[in-house]
Each structure stands twice: as C-alpha cells, then as structure tokens.
Length: 255
Image (cartoon, rainbow, N blue to C red; front, side, top):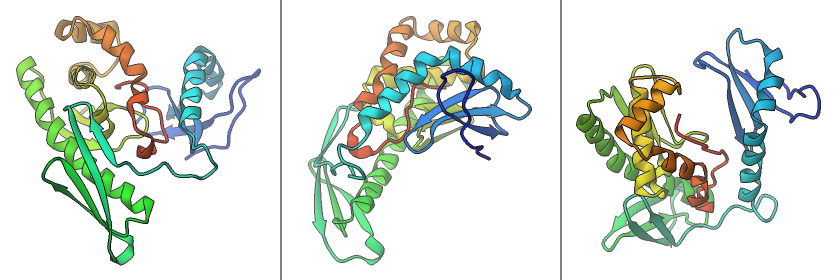
C-alpha cells in the first residue's frame, strides 16, 4: 500500500514508499502520476532509503528531466492523435485514417487496410477511445512480431522460456519472472531492431540468472560482445516514443 510522501534527510527529493510482495530488492520508479516511488520488499529497513536515493541522485535527476519533456505544452491538453505510425523495429510505416460514425459507448474499431493503412471507425472525436484502439492494435502487432522472435532467439542460443507476454508496461522495457515468463513492452515496436534484439537477449539471460551480477553480464557478453553500446543507446530510447502514446512512466532499461 502506498505511504504518504516522505522527505529524506537533507535536501533530498520527495518520494512515496510502496511495499511489494514480489520485490527482491529496492527499485526506483518515476512517473508523472506518482512522482518518485521507492518500491521495497517486506521487512526492508526504511532508514536505508535516504542512502539509496543519494547514490541514485543522477538517475533521479535524469528521470525527472525526461518526464518534464513529455508534459503537454498546455495543462491537461492531450497529445494529438497520429496520422502516421512508424514502427522502427520492423521498418514499417502505417498511415492512420479516422472515420466518424455513431457507435455505442464511444466505441472505436480499428482495422488494417491494404497499403499499410489503419482505419479507425466510430466515435473518432473521442481522443481517449482512439488512443485505446491504437494501443490494442499495437499490442496485437507486438505479440505477432516479438513472441516468435524471442522464442526463435531462445532456441538458437539454448535458453528455455516458460511463457511470453506483451503488455503496456509503464516503467520497464521488459522483465523476466522466476518461472521464466518474459514480459515485453509494446513500446519496443518504436525502437531500432538492434536495440530490441539486445532487450530480448537481456531477458533470456535472466532465465539463467535473476540478477545483474558480473556473472549475468558475462553471460550477456558471451552472446553479444557489443552489448555495452546497445545498453547505452537504450538509456535514451524513450526519445523514440511518439507523444500520442502518452507514456507516463520512464523505461530506463530492461530488467
């Protein structure tokens, strides 16, 4: 359960503490809605939080700056709906058309048309309903593209995967559970192929080691000697996301 914002010793940032039964370590999350959230496992000594925040000061500053660039130019003004969607991961560009038609409960339907066109029909004056329809399409698209790619990469490199899911994650590009379930972020569709491949490999390595120890990075390097370059590029990958996607979190890296 979230706790009220707490002020660390000194001039540290305000933050909210959230206890997670699934957390294995302390994790920092920054979002427009919640600000800085410190996720801690049960039994963690909260007196350690100020020290951790001091050590992550540069990350906190960078994350706050990223969120500042995403805020609408006017208060409560939603991002404009796209007339074109570029999926850098697969080199596809889709044009988007909107056709206003009466529909129950502001329902907007989306269909693929010949020539890489997307047609949205229904209450297209409802920006939220249009964005939700686009999100549904992106989720289907990402599932069709990334699930087979991940399983093929696993087969080629000798990894075992329990299950693959595709979700609209707010703060991570991807994640892996102890049961070897790998969750991939829909937003990977907008990243270059080489960076997507790095994220997939990163999560496959987590099926062997559920940490970021030297042994984990040695395993990553065994499969990708140039991973450091891609890891650095991933830090700024949020800049590739279109404003209409209305991302309210920062996905700093695969985890």
